Length: 390
Image (cartoon, rainbow, N blue to C red; front, side):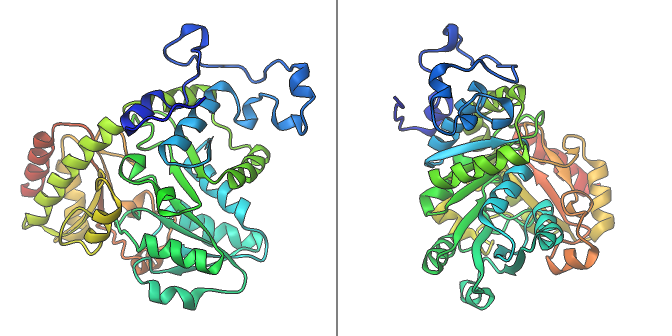
């Protein structure tokens, strides 16, 4: 029987854990076995293929504990882990969309998702139009008779925009559309989209859920019948998460609340500092009162996250010099780890977009994205200041 816990911190540690503990182990063991012994009871069940424990089916004990924990954290009926964030996104979209269908997607998405939708989906017969997440009055004009779903990001990558999420859910329900949202940046600590009415919440578990920059993983959380359909598609597409990666993701999630709450606090300080610095032209962070999405973020989020982006007045040349002068942040892609990472999206997350596409999305070559880690905030501020001054 699943025990209900009030606090998210308690859920992260105890929800979904095996009872009784396996051989008394406080940490769940790694079940490094590709297959498991069948029993007469399993073989007698209908559709037994999907009830047999087998790594490709994402249903070993290491998978199952994550599925239950993730579902409880975001108030979903069920969940599945995948081999990467893109495996979660592509499998979920290919489950709810078929040839001849049309998708509405929020403008300003992560580069990998944008490439999937614009470059791969046309060959599957799936079309897409992009909408302004902050302008609900414009959505109706992009709607078609074959539109089946709307895709959004809780906080967009890399401009940290927060759209009219509640209006998006209400619009989708009125038009009979499914709603999918990438919730990687806020994590369940800051936002739980299913509480707002979204059908599916997606994560790159590589980022905040794991938090240590040492695995690649993904997750899908949502309504039971949708997760069942995704599970079937996932078994055939093969986006399996290895048991050892399951173990590391499970371990990383235990400290998720502590990490994210500190990163919320530190990033807010850094965003405020950058906004006031004379060398900085613009800061993108939903926790700043000057941000267009500030009121929306206050309404739905429990924290503003550890991600921010900004542009220097000296543009690309200034950005390159600034990054070169830094001592603490590591210039590397990805995000959400214990170490602070810095990158220019034009050369990493959005390098697959051509220059014209990036310009249309307001992603300049000099845009700098910062993933705030767990270093002492004062040390990060000192380092940022000396690099800007240099």
